[in-house]
Length: 234
Length: 234
DNA sequence: AGTCATGATACTGCATCCATAATTATGAAT
DNA sequence: ATTCATAATTATGGATGCAGTATCATGACT
Image 1 (tube, protein in one colour):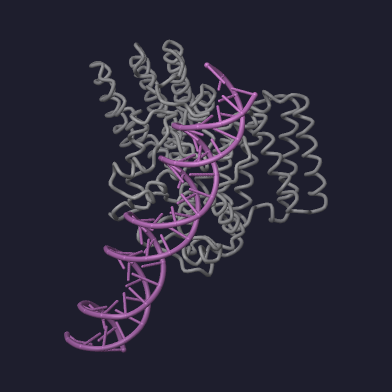
Image 2 (image 1 turned 90 degrees about the vertical axis):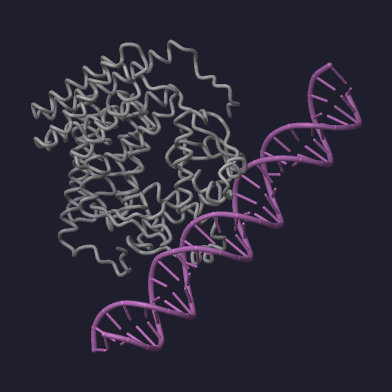
């Protein structure tokens, strides 16, 4: 069930995988903004490859929900509607909540020390208002939790959902005051883990995610609606 | 976010999609058993197409977790370990439970009538010991519930998980007595929906799925271990 | 006899080429 | 001037061809 080809040994990733990864980065960076058409031959020329592996990469991205393939028309970066986001986040909260719950059950003292260490980083980055590093440490915290929970399938679904969420323009952490609130929520989650209270940890993580969605809603509501420059497909 | 190219209009599905669908059928029918290598050019020859769309289809199936791509080696049908199954089912139960919960909140009387009608079919097929039709109606029941719940992303995750589960040799309904038990559980779920009790519906659906997993475990435990004829990859 | 090295074979991975369909531009008619 | 029809263009979808690598078989050496 390991989708990743490089399961255990170092084997040069296939070209289409490399291309897919580069495209993901450009999509997440909004260098390829939602709704923008993807010009196969232009990209193939830019990467110095043929269209074949590029097309294979696009199939993969389509399966991940990052792009939409229109037969005989082409391919554009997925545009998330508000409804889409309202559908993804509750599921994300459900899954992450379950991870926290399971992690609270299984975490050893070593695990907890590791989580506490990452949380310390979070405290530092939050104090320094370093959003980027906070974001990075935040991802490591969640990844560590997933590992402790020990369910690879669950972890994979969360990673997939996170990719979809990353399609949105900016994460909610940019919102004034959100960093501090996020940190406070993390602190409570850690506390629940320390208490080895699965139910509490699960609920707090669940609420943490929904809190992030609410912050994002404020962010979107504040700025204008979608409307990036690119030609939006039907 | 509609991964399906044919979003709303009738547009001939791309060849790679048709191929992917045919391969899925063959995989689910265990005509291509787990662990068996997939010979690209042999299949391309059989389908009367070139290897290009076939390879694209395999990329899609790999993203779905149905096959594993080994760079420079080839591609084989995913083999689920017992651990894999033990990871997927709890997640499936979580997701389906959520669907039932949400459906209990939103179901109108029309919706309920529809569910009750499908359940009547289930009763009939169970009485007639018609496992295949029971299975089919069962899927429609769950699909209807997903529609009522109204979260497409959640529904998609469940569909994906179901695909993975279908990799296993036989579904648990084949087990003696399981049909009747499954029906009884369905009856209780329907009852919870009728009572419009989201929590109860969610819990009962959740337990229903785990009960299915337990039945499957008995099935696997009874027969021998994996060991299908094909050459098993490392 | 067993093991390792070497060569043959077969299949994957990528590039190139061609056909087809969609889009756009152009021109004519109202 | 606007709109519709037609033709040219462009890009996608699929097929074919070729290079590189992994596997398997054969043979030599210990």
